[in-house]
Image (cartoon, rainbow, N blue to C red):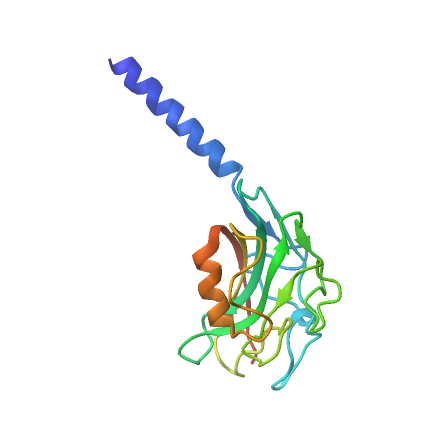
Amino acid sequence: MKTRVLALAVTFALTASTAFAGGFSVTSPDLKPGAAIGDKFVFSGFGCTGGNVSPGLIWKNAPKGTKSFAVTSYDPDAPTGSGWWHWVAFNIPATATELPSGAGTADGATLPAGTVQSRTDFGAPGYGGPCPPKGDKPHHYTFTVFALKVDALPVVDANSPAAMVGYFLNANAIAKAGLTAKYGRK
């Protein structure tokens, strides 16, 4: 009996580690988890003088049943009481495995066909880089890739506020993968 229990425990442990090793993940050639975000990716405005270029994102091992993806960038440390949405792109085709650096332009010209960018908290679609208040502690910027069970999000479009899109992303997510980097101003 002890041998059978031990065998089952070992089988479960191996299965769990294999599932974890093959899990949905996101990396960036431009950002390292926990590291500072470079000036190229910082907002240009509100006193910041960055390049406002969206970082490249690469994802792998999307779960079975993924019909589309979405990408968001969010700052939970913004002094608004509700954080700050820096980028919201959705209806990215299931065949996509990356967005190259600079893909988040306002016109979305280099995004995969069918991708929609909605309004960020800057008031317009497209990527808006970090620009925390001067003298505040470094803020955390989380880039999340959502694997979705639908080809296209219902109800929302390019004019939808980011929080509304976020609601439908979470309602239709099969899995999420993210990375967080930091940025602060003196």
